[in-house]
Image 1 (cartoon, helix red, strand yellow):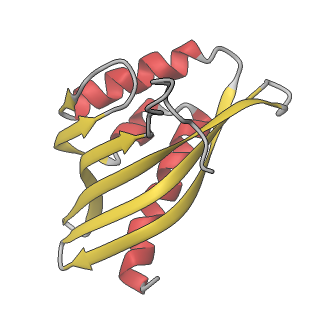
Image 2 (cartoon, one colour; image 1 turned 90 degrees about the vertical axis):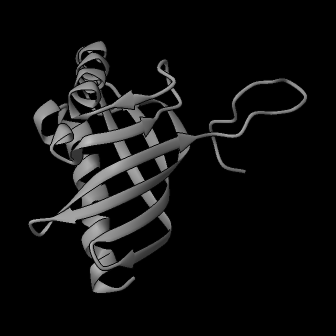
Length: 143
C-alpha cells in the first residue's frame, strides 16, 4: 500500500482500537459529521455522527465485561486527493473479561473517506455479508 493508503489504513486501526476499548468518543471521531451508514445490524441506515455514536454506545453497553477485538484485512483501496475508498474484511471476536475468545464473525466493509484539515474521516460506510440462497441465512465467515 502507498503511504497515503497507509494513512487511510490508520483509520481502520483506530476503529479497531476504539471498539476494543469501547470508547464512544474515539469511535465517533472517525466519522464525518454528515456520515451516511448502511449498517448490516438492526438499523437500515444511520445519518450523522450522533446516530453513529448512539449506535456505538448501545453496542458497547451491551457487551458488559466482554470486549470485541477487530482484525482488519485490507482488500483494496484508492486515494484521489482528499477522497479515498477503502475495502476490507473485518473479523469481530467477542472476548471474555479474561481475554478468551467466545465467538467471532466477519463482514465486508467499504468506506468512502474524505480528508479535511489533514484528518481522514468516514463519510460513507457500507457493511455487508452474503446471504445463502438455500437457507436465507447470512454467512458470517469467509470461505
